[in-house]
Amino acid sequence: MKFTDLGFGADLLQSLDLMGFETPTPIQQESIPHILEGKDMIACAQTGTGKTAAYLLPVLEKISREGSTHTSALIIAPTRELAQQIDQQVEGFAYFTGATSCPVYGGEKSSWDTQKTALTKGADIIIATPGRLMAHLKFDYVKLDKLEYLILDEADRMLDMGFFDDIMKIISYLPKKRQNLLFSATMPPKIRQLSKKMLTDPVQVSIAISKPAAGILQAAYEVSNDLKVPLLCDLMKNHKKLESILIFSSTKKNVKNIVNGLKAGGYPARAISSELSQEEREDVIRGFKSKRIQILVATDILSRGIDIESISLVINFDVPHDAEDYVHRIGRTARASSTGVALTFVNGADSRKFKSIESLIEMKVNRVAVPSYLKPDKRFVQSSGRGGRGGSSRSGGSGRGGSRKGGSSRGKSGGRSRDNRSGHGSNRKKSSSNQNRKPKSSNSKPGGPQKKDS
Ligand code: AMP
Picture 1 (tube, rainbow, N blue to C red):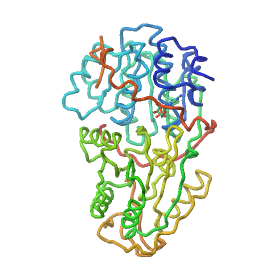
Picture 2: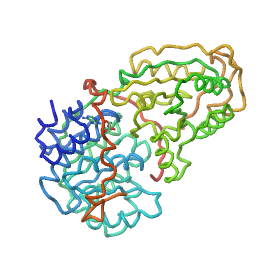
Picture 3: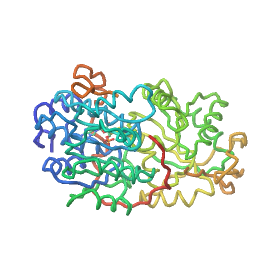
Picture 4: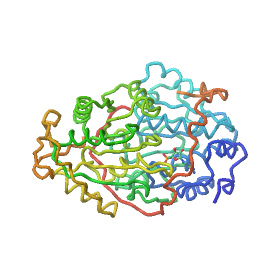
């Protein structure tokens, strides 16, 4: 199937052509015809499957057919980063259709007024985080009375973050008659509950999430906590090209330890976690994307949703709490048909968790021996919490290790002008490696609630 078979107008096809999109991914093939027909939908698909285009393209097509002059679509996303990324994709897809959009999220000093204008004059598409949209809804300038499409992206993440009530409140401001699309990486019972509340006779689409992309070479080191930083520095020493290396840790505290350990070993690294301001986070992501920053140490803030191309190496400094977070983390590499390496440090306390990951992904990950010349280094071992003391066994057997899981806008809307499309072209990409995924249902458990204003 080609995009030309889906019934899109010439403007949208021209944008897709310019962006190098030829073949719809499985989630796009399954979703787009139903969305064009006007059906409600619940879709189980993770980042990397092309889920954003799966809902954006048909919604943009319908908006362009209708030629609307009000806000037609509201996309709610859990984080600013994801909202920005969706907005960038709208910018690319709508290049020739002229649809307008505005991201609405907190943290930027100057953006309130732009957001207010877009919400008042009616940008075609609003992409909002729940907290910030709720803040605007307290004022009566928000005009969502003609809304036709409501999309929840990464709904499971939003519920994990404690946004259920905010989402229900936002829905209460919307017209009753509208098309609803719910996208979620996992389908825990509370997503089913939400879908019962907000969807009418939905079509269900499901794409397997439990298999990492085929191009990822995975390996694990069984290593105690006090050997983790020495092992990390050793890997850096042997990594031919020190470029685009992403290291994950579940806690902010460990992120600091890792950055300090790498710096002490002579490897400049930067950290990204919720401790940074919005501007700082954006700067770090920009620096990493442009390869100005070569080694990035992150909490799970980056593991979902964020699309950074050509990461060569992902290292899990600890085993993620949720097995599916492992798939999300290592999915940062080998995107869009490329290959990549994902290494995981497993201490004794984490070995059970890692086994459950192996059963989720239905494969045994190769174990690699820790070099015998490495010396333990206690300076960078986290000293409190479940990620506590590291033992000194080379096999990782004795340490109580691991870690606790812890705008632009256009035209009439006060939004982005048609002539200001600098981001266009940056989305250019060959077919995604995930296109080979077969539809399959999945189940999983979410992490604990941690509501924060995004
Ligand atoms: P997503 O799952 O929406 O985060 O998309 C992952 C990446 O795949 C993004 O960079 C998209 O631009 C890209 N992508 C999505 N659909 C296609 C497609 N049909 N052909 C090529 N690239 C795509």
